[in-house]
Image (tube, rainbow, N blue to C red; front, side):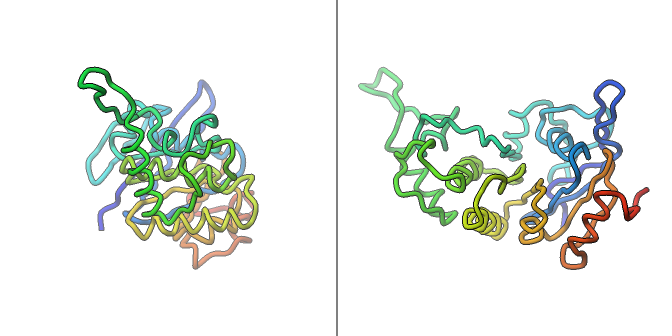
Length: 251
């Protein structure tokens, strides 16, 4: 099977600091992988290169077998790469369906002359994507500020999936959530994977990553130091690789 995304020998520097040093990885359709490492290991910088926030000094990116250059976040979105950061980028004073269409609102002609928001269409489409992902929100007219953390995460994910994300990058998706809501988000990740969406998770919550990821990429000091099949490793081994008490495979 051909990888959905492949990055080869990516290097990113900020002045004299090397934030990502010669990192390569692959992810296949419908696969969930975890990128793990301590603060400053290069995880966030790596995903920002993939999502078009940063431009790498060296390396190549392939998507569906074709070499691509991602020069902006909008280019990444057009390709089908969506990133959900910890702040979720939701408008708290707006309702659920408006957030799913945020920045890409559906318009219709009023009296054949004036463009107005097509609320009925946006509500209908939002219901469809929430139903597809088995997400329960009492009313799509609820303001985001009135939703729980897990429901907000679900809205952000629904927005990405509605706009045809093929690769979803999730940065600390269960941070600041209670245990029940963590389970709901992880179940949603499993649902997305079963529907063919590839997912990269960055998290400090090893238990959560072990619950959904099939492979783990471990980074330390800007380098990829190891790659493990989740079922064939343990949290203890991963922690040892993260902190350096085990040397890793590539150093």
